[in-house]
Structures are given as C-alpha cells and as structure tokens.
Length: 271
Length: 114
Image (tube, rainbow over all chains, first blue to last red; front, side):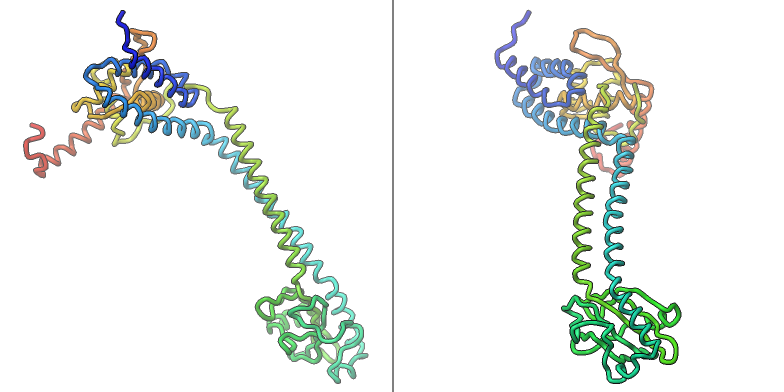
C-alpha cells in the first residue's frame, strides 16, 4: 500500500474539518464521498496543488453558502409553514388594529360628553325663550359656564357658540386669533336636516376641536355649537397607538421565533 | 426519490457538465469533476461541494440516480436517468442551434464545426 506524503494527509485533515461547516443533513449524505473526491484530486498528477487548493477554497465558499441557503429554504420556506406564519401575522395585525381602534373610538366619543350636555341644556334654554335678551346683548347664559373668552388654540376648557339660522355668529365664548370661528356650511346643512352633528373640527392648522352642534327650533331658529380642544385626547390616542404598535411588534417577534423553532424541529430529515 | 421538476433550458454549467460526463456511462465523483474540467467536458472548474450539491438537486429532479455500483466504500457512482438523457438532448439541440447560427453569421471563422 502506498504511503501518502505528509502534506497530503494534512490537506485531507483540513478538508475534513472544513466539511463540518456544511449543514448536517448534507454532511451526513456526502461527507465520505466528498473526502474521497478530494483525495482523488490530491492524487491526480495532472492537477497541481496550486490549481487544486484555490479551486477547493472557492468551491467551499460558494457551495457552503449555497447549501446553507438550500437548507434554510427547505426548513423555512415550506408552504404549510409560510401559510401558518401569514395567517398568524394577519391575526396579530387585526388584533393590534383592534387594540388601537377600540380605545381610540372610546376616547374620541368620550371627548364629546361635556359638549353634548352643554349644547342640550343651552338649546333647551333658548327654545324656552329665556335667553333672548341676553343673546341680543351679545352675551351667553350662565348655563354655558366658562371663565370668559376661551382661546380655542390653547385652552382645554369647553365653550359654546350660538349661530343664527343663516350661520352668523350671535354670541361666542371662544375666540381663535381674535375672532369667533364658523364651521363649514355643510355642517349647518346637515344639522338643519338631522338635528345634531358630532364632528372633529379643524378651524385652522394645529387646532382640532371635538364639536357637537345642535339645532335650535321654535320661534328663533339657529344653532348651538359646543366644543373643546382635542389636544389631550389626541395625546392619549397617540399613547394608545404606540402601545398597540409595540404589542404588534411583540406578537410578530413571537410568531417569527415560534415559526423558526417549529420549522427547525419539523424540518425534512432526508439527505 | 425524485420530487422536483426537470430544469428548463439553459442548464447551469455544472449541471450540463455532469449530464455530459454521465452520458458516457456510470461514473464516480472525481471522475465527473475531471471530465467537467476538460475543454470537451465544458471546462468547468468544479470542487466536491459544487459537485455533490448539484448531484443532490439533480437526483431530486430525477435527472440522475445512484447506480449502486461501488468500488470503494466511499466512492459513489451515478448514472443518467431517462429524464436526464432527454434534458441533455434538449440542451445539446439548443447549443447546436446557437453554434449553427454563429457559424452562419461568420462568427466562427476557422470552421468551429464541420
């Protein structure tokens, strides 16, 4: 039996070590055959070491990348696994959206509560005709509360504004840039038909108001608008949004890890 | 067990060289590598990793199979399947048409083929 030169044995051992870098199923299937092919190449006198060593190094780099990618594809790109992950992601996304939308709606609707009470009481008083004299002097009744003119841009206090039937301001507790703002004509038309509207009103950029407008009937028809700056409510909505976002990212992380672990333990074992 | 579908032309150089080598008969890994390295075998410098990775995918696609012949515990012999022969024939026809076209255009001035 022919004895191998020491350099051949060393290269053979190094190649055997390098084969440990291949994915286990591939290694189990082809380790012996690959070592034999490498030994055959070492013994081939037509192939110099200067040619063989770079060739094998290049081959190791490219085939290692290729086999690991193939293993990842076989492990994680199975249709069942991908389908389950997509369904779970869709569920998590729906849940996160609900986690945001439900509290957001509760907060937004709750922001109208004082305005509803104020508008209802003021409309009742106006319809009784108790306040005609006060309104004619440009004032507002005590029922509307408040500490004088409300700066809509900065104050969080609720306020009321009374408009005549054509939408002109009769009296206002609130001012924005020194004037009592008037909502779009469409709001008056809607309230004229439906009796009430609850809406988010942006009288100018950066100022959003939770507003309730009700119709005043009887002898002196008009409109009452009760509103309040939404700054605090929107800050809370933003917090809810951040919590829902974090929850969504957390759920996606759990799905990712769970899918990876499940995919790994159920991966095809054949080589 | 073959579970894949036959690869569409053009084949990768490694797959083509392996099919061409096995067209002569059953061969083991290093023999295929040596054939592939020769100019008439495709001139592909292929190492054991590329060879056995390609062979595994080709077995999955049903192009080659282990012949069961064994001259050594570590040498595994492979052969073409019928599907492998068909795929090789289609690829050779494709290449032949390309060479004919190049010939007609005068791109092979020394008569690359007769």
